[in-house]
Image 1 (cartoon, helix red, strand yellow):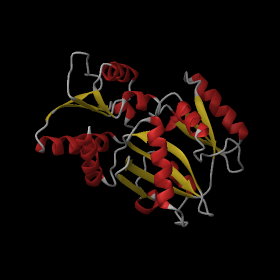
Image 2: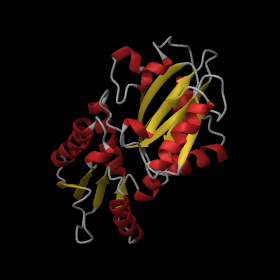
Image 3: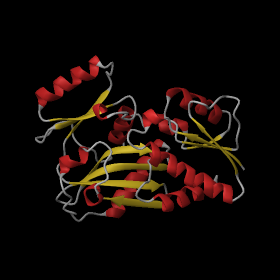
Length: 262
């Protein structure tokens, strides 16, 4: 099997460049040991002249996704599907989850708001900001417009335990509390404080996340949820191919298992 592993450009890996490369390399090393011929390149280096039996892609740039979609349309195998990654645009994803009754935060609440860039994944802390009230929200929306961003999502802040989950659809699912290990990308986790470890149905979270994965068409995924005091939860984020830094070895094994089914 010929595999081209497409690395995510650093602008789409804020504070996670090393971690994102590490999971892709871990998968590639396993596939090489199984006899695959693996070539790794940046999403900026990918061209129409590159050919493989499988494209193992962490790409997020519009140019790379367009190229990979063209290859998929011509019959190429791509994980994650470029069409699926394109649907992970936060605005599209929010609409999809609303249509499919996936629990997500309301747009109104009493504890402040989160303003999130809607056209693509966050590239800096300024793409996901907390606003204490409506006046602050309006001011930050104006700041987005000044930066050329007119596509955003507003979520009311939901008190509760922040949980980060990592998965490969149908075979692997793990969740962690960031306040337990102190690992953070932008520091936003402090808004929910130290986890109280409210009891909740972890299997239901897995089924809910897997449902989003299936609807979007992205089997290698991760995300964030808030578990409320009553045990109910809502998804606040869903990502194509996270770093899996808390469970890299297990995740790499699961991703290889997925590849071998293709």
